[in-house]
Amino acid sequence: MEKYPGLIYGIGLRRREHTMKKLISSVLALALVFTMLIMPASAASKFDTFTDIGSSPYKDAIRYCVEHNYMGGTGGTKFSPRLTVNRATMIQIIWSIMGRPEPSEDVVQFEDSVNHWAKKPIKWARESKIVAGTSKTTFSPNSPVIRAQAAVMLRALAKQDDSNS
Image (cartoon, rainbow, N blue to C red; front, top):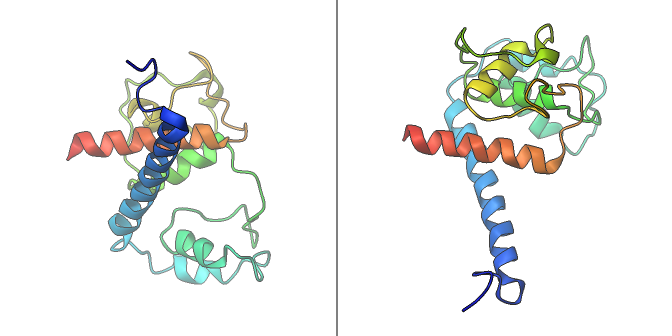
């Protein structure tokens, strides 16, 4: 009897890694399909105003996100494609992909996001169990989102989508 089923010669680790990649790919594909019908007319021209994209390898992805109103840049004519994504921005993107649903009023807000620009997406994400805080009372919205945190958020989103199916 194995002590750790599925971890024979490291195969289980690769399977889990493959499963997580497959899950993230599925969530992103679902988001793309879900939003193909919701393209605001004014967003397409906004992309052309960004002066810092140039020949970025992410140009097509940036265009897609701007055209679908998931992201709007960092102000004026800047998109800041090399800027580190923080926890608030990650949640705002997920919230936008999900159609910007309204959170209920009875959800307790994290103390450090009560007056934050992303308070509504953070409140919705907490209510939807997509995020937990960095403590019971804090979310740390301005801290960089690390890969593991992003994976947890996307996995929670996928579980939520599965339960709604």
